[in-house]
Length: 488
Ligand code: ADP
Image (cartoon, rainbow, N blue to C red; front, side, top):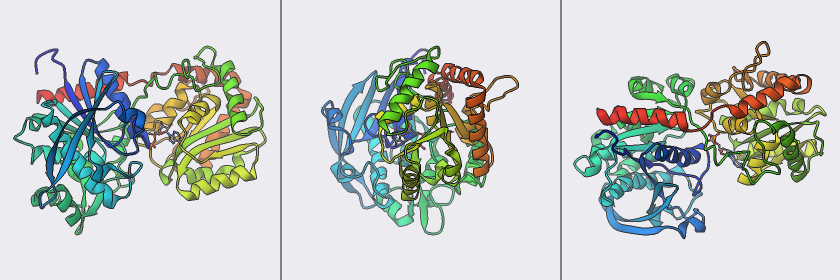
């Protein structure tokens, strides 16, 4: 590649803020392309045109063309439409097909999602060829885009897009796209020999899309260095640890950042009071008051507010929170939970809200606006995850001067240094083993510092707000990887 030529990077993934987001993947698909554009790359993001995308974005789309594409073992053809928009220097190409993308928010269930994402992965490559835009690198995300490296090296190897290198990023290994071999053979239309053990075969009867992608991608990344190590072990590998150990020379961990414009307490209009590192201690009190008022909590600036914003699933360590809940509430503490998910946790937290009226709010919903106020109004923020590939909530919390209490796993370990009283260092309170008692100890340590060593607490707030959690340094690491691949 000529020196100073613009690198052309295509992103392929199943969600992207602000169009559609269910978790951290959506944030990364939004923020990393923007960071790469500011580093001088040309970036196209390819997404399904789901029915659930808000109309205000659909109204901005421009028709770029359409064609029929064969999919499935028997060569059934399907419509592929290309709808495009540009935002902040990034080009977004949406794949239109109503048979696949007209229901779900955006996911439905694996039986339907597997055909949907086989089609999406193949259509993404076909679209790049149709648009005559040959990327240097195709950066694919999670199992939904994991057939891209396979299609690229088989059905598309002798087309313009076949020259691109592929990167596959693991955002969460728990979800792998596993189904019956015949189901995947039919819908992917991929060659039989790709269903052997080194590639797609998972067991006698089933195939695994993520496994195949990991075998065929030129480079594999995941979203923190610790998670890159953890997934090579039986405890965290979700059955793919041996496969990942085998492919480990191509596996790298790069921690996520957050979009510091989207998450900026000094300019955040969703807050009751904006603030920066210098006036956080005073201004956060105003946000705490607004949060307490909005959620019907006792309005008392002296109470310590613990926040938690999460998908309510086993991954997030909520059974630990559930187990110690009564001991969190001590007359000086309030707890605010925002999340939806497993009814077991939704009901448990609703129960505690009823039991501790005025001290606990369980807001069982997905609500971006409220999330901002919690990040700003809470004093400490709980992330006790069983596993956490990177985790964004602890990064956002630090940016908003809210002290994280985290389990030392994955990206939580890489981004939150434990508070050290002796030298007044660190970003939060941490515990290692997955144990409710240890979480309680960590929360109690946080309470002790908050109530009895306020100066040290306030200094930590300031330190966290000044910590670099932006995409800049991570984007530079991705660029270095892309360059390494391009030069190969
Ligand atoms: P994961 O991707 O595993 O869900 P992350 O910590 O990487 O977890 O990202 C979670 C993102 O989703 C954060 O931006 C967080 O603020 C947001 N989020 C999670 N649950 C909710 C909710 N109920 N309402 C609003 N935002 C939420």
